[in-house]
Image 1 (cartoon, rainbow, N blue to C red):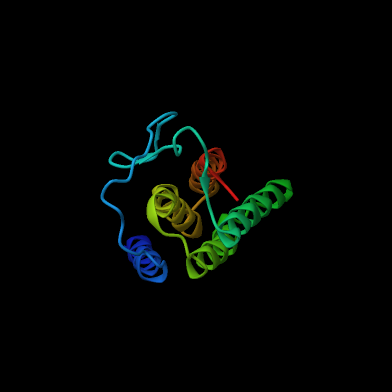
Image 2 (image 1 turned 120 degrees about the vertical axis):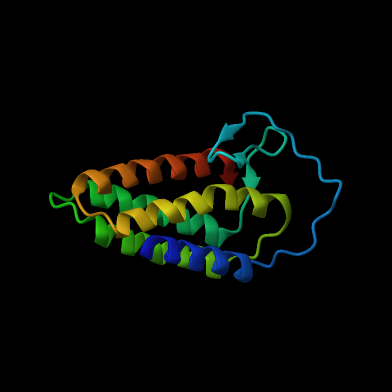
Length: 150
């Protein structure tokens, strides 16, 4: 229950903090190199190219990756503490969001599952659950870098 509440709060923060202005109805998005991130949403490239993101988003995800790299070198694996550190980075990304349009929508396709994986890390009851959540998050971060650039 706690994780669902956290996810709902974070999703509301994402929805209201981003300057999501009116979208053009005739937006053309190529579906080349398509992957599925969740059952109903698809992450795709922008006509074969990576989507552009703002510097804060790119920096935030790069910082998440460096936090994970440092964590993996530590002998002790405190997944809950890792989740809290990563949560600060996602908060930074959300608070500094100024993206609009299709690139913003595509960012949400990968960011929402990241928030879920981080929530699972913060509530990992054992190292097996923590490792599973971390593996999922690492895949999502790789998806981000495969589809977005500064």
